Amino acid sequence: MFRKLDSFLLCLLATVILASVMPCRGAGVGVFNMLALIMIANMFFLQGARLSRRAVVEGMMDWRIHLAIGLCTFALFPLLGMGLHALVPGLLDGPMWTGVLFLCCLPSTVQSSIAFTSIARGSVAAAICSATLSNILGIFLTPLLVGLVLARHAAAGGGGIGPIVLQLLVPFIAGQVAQPWIGAWAHRHRKLLSFSDRGSILVVVYTAFSEAVVQGLWHRLPPMQLARVALVDMLILAIVLGLTRLVGRMGGFGRADRVAILFCGSKKSLASGVPIASVLFAHADVGLIVLPVMIYHQIQLFVCATLARRLGAQAEGTE
Image (cartoon, rainbow, N blue to C red; front, side, top):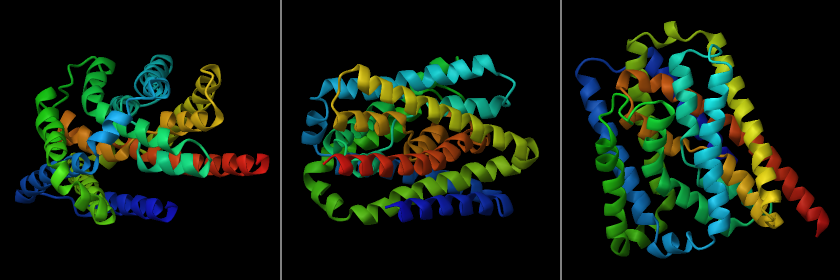
């Protein structure tokens, strides 16, 4: 599991390097932009096809834990991001703060949230349902939150809510409609389709960074700024991990549910973040804006992997 995640991070790094050395130019820009749109639509179509309607219904039943995770994901994070921006506005430049605030508006991850919850001996069923529900709601809530947090109307160069509906929601609904016919096939070929999902992200990252490099990305972003972004990301993760543990205890949840809240409530989805950013923001800005998301993604994997193993060992010791 972790090897696969690490290999994907290496692919992301390689893609950024490739875009820096050989950015897409001229007629190739239009080709890659169109390819990115098609692959993003395909990714959300297959997500809809893989998710059974029964899972959607069951995912909404245990409302207390879903409410706790949802509030951490879509309320605590944005408030924390806005609070840090208000306290130290000069710590990062404008695009980097936009990226951090965009990060705070994203849904939770699915794959790693479930994996870490399982390793820590938490409620896997709750993690599956909550993480899945978070990603469904993120299609609607993330653009709205971006509009509120950034004091814009979710139209930061991307044309408003219309592109989100057409490029993300419509394919997802189409996948749900087709689920009775292709759902079983999608589950049988889950590993193959995961390559398609990750390929979509890599194409979007390459396209976004190519345009950013052509616009002078690395001249506008000194190494110290990257270090500050990493510091802000680590601070956000540390605060959220502490608060999600507090939410679990104050809410009277059992240990298994507290573990699910801890990992689902502290994660942010790179898989959803890159496509949504490509729709919401101007192409020239996407490369800069997704950098905080990519850095947070890597930090959360290493920190939560360590934490999950520790919690799992503690659970084994009490059995």
